[in-house]
Image (tube, rainbow, N blue to C red; front, side, top):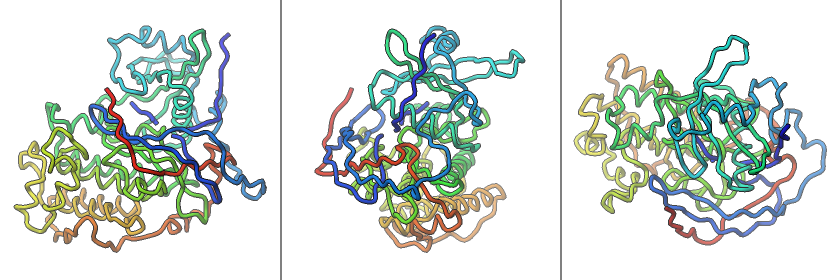
Length: 443
C-alpha cells in the first residue's frame, strides 16, 4: 500500500506563497520578480526558508481552534475526501488530453465523474487538478489550497471535494478535486475571444457574488483570510452563473489582534496588487478591496488591468479610465464595454464606477470594508432590477477621500478573536521587499 504523506508548509494556483506574520523580526532580503506570461504578469519572489523571527513560547498566545497546517483526515468533519491516485487516474482515463479543461504553470485540470460516498452509485461532475512537479513551493501551494477550502464554507467559494497525496516510484502525486464549474472563469467571458459577452445584469450579479465571498473571508469567521490574488480568472461560474472565488494557494491569515498588517513576500498579479503592498510588503484585507475595485472596472470596460497588446496609453486600465471619470455621461460612455451594445443602464454603470473608486483610494485605511462594498453593490443590483433611476453619486477621482474609511481594528470589534497563524503555527518568518522588481520574460 502506498504511503500517504502530509506536509507542514503552506501557500496558490487555481481551476496558486510563502510568507508570514511577525511582531518582532529580522528582515530577509529577497529579490522579487515579475514574470510575463501570455495572459497576465505574475509577481513572485525568491524563496528563503530561514526562520528569522522571535518565536514566542508564551502559552497565552496559542489558540484553541484546530491548526490548518495538517491535511484533514478521513474522519474530519469537513467532509473532504481522500482519493487514491488510482481512483483519479481511472476517472480521468489516465489523465487523457480529451478530458483536459485547463492547463497552466500549476499543471493540468481534467473533467472527471466520481462516485459519491452514499452507496447510491451516483456520480458527480468534478474538476481534477494535477499539480506539476515544482518542489517545495508546489507542496506549499497545494497544502494552502486544502487548508483554506477544507475549512471554509460559503456559496460564493468554490467547493473542494477532496484531495490526493501519495508516494509512488515517480515521486509525490498531488491532486485536488473541485466541484465542476461549467461556465469557466469571468476572464474567459470578458475576453475579446468570447462569442457571447456577459450581459450587464450578469456582470452586476458577478460583482455581488464576488463581494459576498470576500466579505465572508474578511469579516464573517473567527479569523480573517486575505485572498491576495483576487482577479477575474480566479472567479468561476457554475451552471446557473453564480460566481465563486477559487485558487486559494496565495491566501493567508490576516494579522493577529493588535497588529495592523502582515509582513509578507510580495506575490500576486500585476494590475491587481494594491500599491502599498507592492511597495512595502505590508498586507491587509484592504489589499483585496483594491483588487476588487480593479475588477469592477474590468466588468465595466471589458478590458484587462494590464494589456500589453493595446496602444501604450491604454495598456494600464486604471490610467486609461481615470480621465473619463466625471459626471459627463458622454465622456464616461467612452470607457464602457462596446460589446454591451447599449443594453444596460448608464447610471447603473456610473454607480458601480463610484464604488470602484472608493475601493481604489490611495490610502488603504480610507477604503471601505467588503461588507460596506457589498451593501453598496446590493443597492445597485436592486435598483437595476426594478428599473429605478436614483440620483447619481458624485464620481470622485480614484485618489479622492472617502467617508467609508476604517482601520484594521474596526473589523475585529465584533469578533474579539485571537490568532495564531494556522498555516505556520507558532513559527513566523518575515520576507521583506527590497530593491526594485526585475522583469523576467517567460514563455
